[in-house]
Structures are given as structure tokens and as C-alpha cells.
Image (cartoon, rainbow, N blue to C red; front, side, top):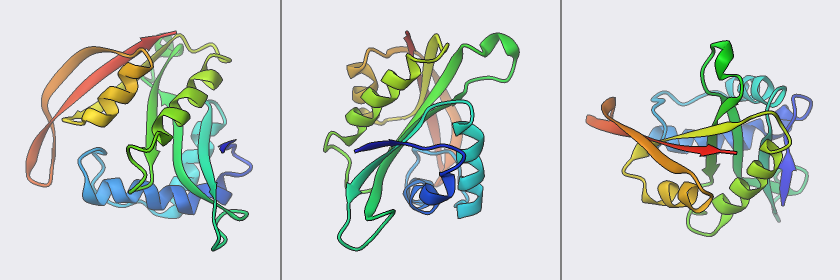
Length: 172
């Protein structure tokens, strides 16, 4: 089930979101961050983002407890695209699912809910930066109407490899 995250409940989800995100930092090129984050850093980020933009978690029932008897298996949010004021009607998307949950439709459910929430705001355009290759993320974004607008060659370096970044846009 989809649940909104706010500055008031950020601490409730920070540990599980941190674990999901740190997997991508440590094991993939999907995130260009290279140093795992602490739970307090994630909590600060959640608070800073959710005070202004939609931030959602996907919760599944967990027999071993988890967050209020649930476990976070994915999350999605939008955040500032660029700092200059004329960009205020644009935002960047982020969607992450727990390792092992890729390809099960969770990303699509998160994207659908995120777009519903974004359409309640004054955001006019969404941008998605995708490390390439990443066929699953490209397919997810294109399924929801995002169009490829560009590719930057070898703009990141991680795990000893030069990495390309593609950009997709959805005008709402």
C-alpha cells in the first residue's frame, strides 16, 4: 500500500529507506553517490523534500515487525530540478525499490501514485535522470509518457567505469 511521508513521520521510515538506497550506492551505478549514507542523513533529506513535494513509500505487511508491522519495499518522490527561480515549476523524479523487488510492478505502482500527487501541485514538468544502460527504468518512465530528451556521455565515474546519463521529461 502507498503511504505519504511527511516531515513529521520521516524518522519512522528513514532506516528502511536508507537500507534500500545504500544498496544502490554500494552495488550499482544507478546512483552516482559513492559513500553510503547514515540514517540521520536520509531522515534530513526526507524532511527537506517532503515539506515541499510529494514523498511516498510502498508498505507491505511484515511478519517480523518492520515499520508499524509493515516493511518499506520502495519509495518515490520528486525534488528540486534546479535552484534558480524560473525552474520552480519543474522537478526531478526518484523511484527506488528494495533489491529483489525489481520487475514485480512495484515501480509502476509508485510512479502512478506519485504522478497523481504531483498533478495536485503546480509542477508543470518532470525530469528523470537515468544512468545508462538501465532498461527497466527507461521502460518504466516511457510507460508513463516520459520522452527521452538527451544523453550526456561519460559524465560520471563509478566502479572504474565512465557512465552516461540519459534524461527523460514529462510535461504535465
